[in-house]
Amino acid sequence: MPLYLKQGNITSFPADAVVNAANPTLLGGGGVDGAIHAAAGPELFEECLSLGGCETGHAKMTKGYRMPCKYIIHTVGPVWEGGGRGEEELLASCYSESLRLAEEAGCETVAFPLISSGAYGYPPRDAWKVAKDAILGYLLSSESDLTVSMVVLDKRMLDTDESDSDRLLANRVRDMEKPKKESLPGFLMADKKVSSRVKKAKDMNTANMAIAGSESSFGFMCLAEKEETDLDERLRSKDESFSEMVLRKIDESGMTDVECYKRANIDRKLFSKIRNRDYRPSKPTAVALAFALRLPKTEAEDLLRKAGYALSQSLKFDVIVGYFLDQGRYDLFAVNDILFKYDQPQLGG
Image (cartoon, rainbow, N blue to C red):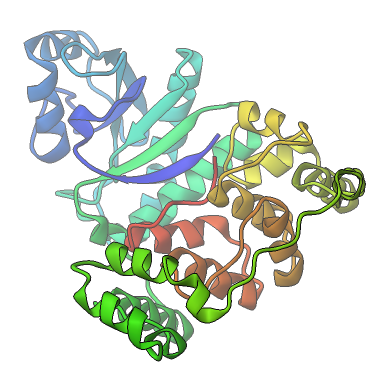
């Protein structure tokens, strides 16, 4: 059931069904509508002629024709008139009706544009909030395993209003993006031989090799070999695994497996792997499960360690995740909005 943000051209986006922000005639127009009709070819126009148009908030399906999708779902969004004419309900209906058609057609993947945010004048930030709530509401309340992508040409369309504290996070991440000179710790540069070789190195990789070749200069010591019986004992006394902790926390929370994997933005197939004691997830998946289980930061970090990860203050992804954990804010999709903004992997499977 994952929901992801993607930057790209929806006419070439790989999905079983692509949603068209159509006008009531379904016969093409400007913006996304015109681009989809142009990409699909004249056969789409011919089929749309037979559909008799479409009402606002409803959806109709056609073949994909020359586009790389099986189906095109045409939905008519509302024209923005200030928000007091039922625009939110009609826009939400566009998403739920489109998802219903996709599910009935047996689709596994669906791609949406940001409906009504162009010529119809719906404020993009408000349109994204309605879209997100409608899509997640549908996916969480159904047995669907659809994977949904929101595809935009310009990611700035999805910028959300920032609180004062969120602006501090934004400033911190932007500071991390500024180029910094690579330097070596003072205790390394204090060794004249290493310092000389490092200064002569053409790049940092060569410099690292120079350091590695001078380990004796710093008194580095090899660890003594351990007896095989000692190693066997250590392996037998391994700590609780990542999978075991996740399953234990699900039981303690009273949550079902389905609730957990949907809240974590992962699908059923991926979640089934978690029952394997030796399963090692990606870092975004591990973090997503910590958010779904609403783990305090110390427990979230413990869960990450069991998967072989840690949160670092030198990585943008980790700084953003840690910021939300510090505040006890477990809105995974709010985190994904910011991760998307800064070109970071999104939480989920």
